[in-house]
Image (cartoon, rainbow, N blue to C red; front, side, top):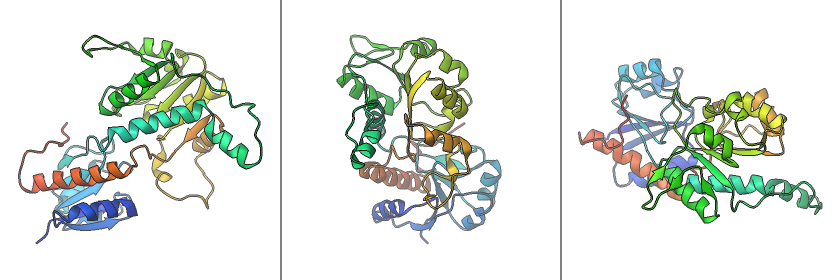
Amino acid sequence: MAYTIAFFGSKPYDEASFNEKNSGYGFELRYYKGHLNLNNVILTQGVDAVCIFVNDTADAEVIRQLAANGVKLLALRCAGYNNVDLNGITVVRVPASSPYAVAEYTVALMLSLNRKIPRATWRTRDGNFSLHGLLGFDMYGKTAGIIGTGKIAKKLIAILRGFGMYPDYNFAREHQVVYTTLDELYRSSDIISLHCPLTEQTRYLINDYSISKMKDGVMIINTGRGQLIHTNALIEGLKNKKIGSAGLDVYEEESEYFYEDRSDKIIDDDTLARLLSFNNVIVTSHQAFFTREALANIAATTLMNIKDFMEHKKLENEVRL
């Protein structure tokens, strides 16, 4: 009997990439559009493995129900696991689908905010070719503060050095890295980009107090996890001009909106609606990872993780407490 995998929160692009890669494995794949939660966990009865994404719920009670239903493995098709309780069943993840994708998207947000590209596009479509309000700055010679130095951050640093920017730590002769303190990073950075995991230590890393230490007019970019930023503090910083602009590919309460078409409904999240009202803020729907190469890597790594588990091999991408 084929090994059965239930996918939650699946989209057509997930199905296409996993079906293609599964031709070499022969697993039985079941796709469910809804996010995994207590109301639909019953669908996992008789399933060997469950595959989820960033906005699915796998808290302690869901994990308990999965185990009771006979699920042996929880496979994350993403890097972050802040939405998962790690007690009960084995958990694996995709540590890096494409660090290039996220790093390149981060720079796209920086450039779009700095040079006001969305505003310029809207204007010219309306026949307004004025440059008023579109003034940017040279990124050359500016200081980039990168919080986190994982694979994505390292690719981002390489790109920014090509602009002639300077991270808030210096590369010594043989590329040994000297880190600065967060206080110094806040004080001296023109652009701050978040690339650290969401943990109890990093939750609301960007808050009223940390914002108060930053340069006036600082640009903040978040392609990591929404709860790295206290959104109300960000809004206050934008209102009082302490923060010059913000590029957000994630939002702390994104699960009700991101990856869904809500265009025929009123946004009843007042905080998100307020963010969307700023002309110096870009909000996108957690799409930094979204390239053909990344989707292929996600499918390949996820299915290999499941195969290794099934064959009792060492799990290179297991998540442990």
